[in-house]
Length: 151
Image (cartoon, rainbow, N blue to C red):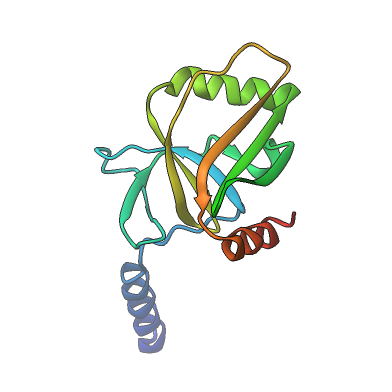
C-alpha cells in the first residue's frame, strides 16, 4: 500500500513543529506562593520584576486559599500585603509553614515573582495573618496593586 506524498510531508512537518515548541509556563492563578528551589533542574523557572530567573517548586497557596487580602501602609511610601487565612485554609498555611520554616518562598502575581520571603512558623490560632513587607514603595504602585487584586 502506497502512502500519498502529501500525507507523508504533513507528518514530517507535524513532527518538526512539535520539536520546535518552547517550554513555556502558563500560570492561571492571580496569586501563588511557591517554595524557592534554586538547585533543582526540574523546578519551574519564573522571572522576577527585574527579569532575574528564579526556580520555584509546586504551588502551595493560590488566591482561592486566601480569605482576605489587604494592602496596608506601614510608613511613608512603604506598603505591606496582608493575607488572612481562616479555618481549613489556615490549617493548609500552617502545614506549609511547618514544612518550610526558615526556607525561602516566592509570592507570584500574574506570572512574575513579586517578592521573596523567609517562611516563619505560625502560632496555633484559629486564623493567621501573614504580612509580606514592602510589597510596593509608592502610593501609585499600591493603588495599582489593589486594582490588580480587585480590592
